[in-house]
Image (cartoon, rainbow, N blue to C red; front, side, top):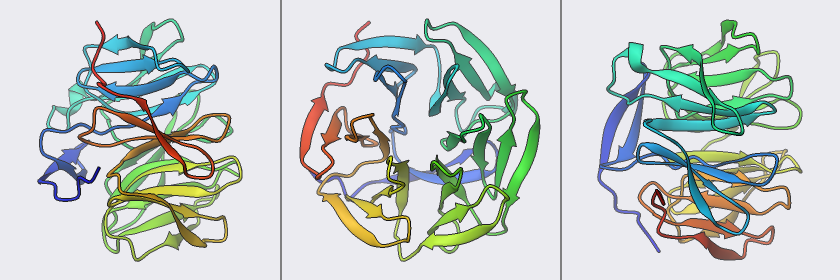
Length: 266
C-alpha cells in the first residue's frame, strides 16, 4: 500500500503553525490508555478500540487534532485550523466520557505530557508548557521553526518535528536546551518513543527508528503513515492520513492489520 503521491493543502493551526496535510484528510493521532484501549480521531469523533479491535464512539461533536493521556484522562485538541481562536480549545475527558475544558484559544496536532504531568503543546515557532494547574508559559521558541508533532521519553526529553527550516527532529532537554537530533529528512510526521528510549518517526512511506544516540535505521516501509503509538507489549500501532485502517507492528517489524473500515459505529 503506497500513497506517496498526495495532494497537499496548507492549514494554519492555532493561528501560527502552518502544516501540510492531504486534501480532505484529518490527522491520524493514536494514543493508548492505561488499560490498553486505543483512541483515534475520526471525522467529528474520537473512537475507542479495545484490545480485540472492537470499536465504539468515545466522544463526538468535535474537530479533533491532537490526542494525549495523563493519569487522569484523555486530552483532545479541538478546533478546526480555520476556526476562530475562541472556538479552539484543549478538552479533557474522564474515562467515562465526561468532558471539561482544560484551556481555550489553542489547538494543535502536537501535544505530549512529561512524567511530571506538564502538558506541552506545539504552536508554530513555539512550544507552550501547561502545568497541572493550567499555568501557561513559553517553553521554547525558535525563529524559522514550525513545530508540529511531539513525543516525550522517560527522561523528560521532548522530541519535536520541525517542518520549518531546516526540516529536522529537535531534541529539547527538561531545562529547555535545544539540539538537532535528526536531519536529512523530507517530511517527517508522527513520533512515538518506545520503552527503550528509541524514537520512531513516520517519514514519507517509511517508519524510521532512531536509537538514543541518534543511530538511524528503517523499521518498516511501504505504508504512508502518520499517527503512531506503542502498547505496553512494545507493539507499534500506526495509521495514515487517508487510510481507514490501523496497522500493528510487532517489535521485530512484522506488520498486520489491527482494524479496518475505521468509521464510527454509531
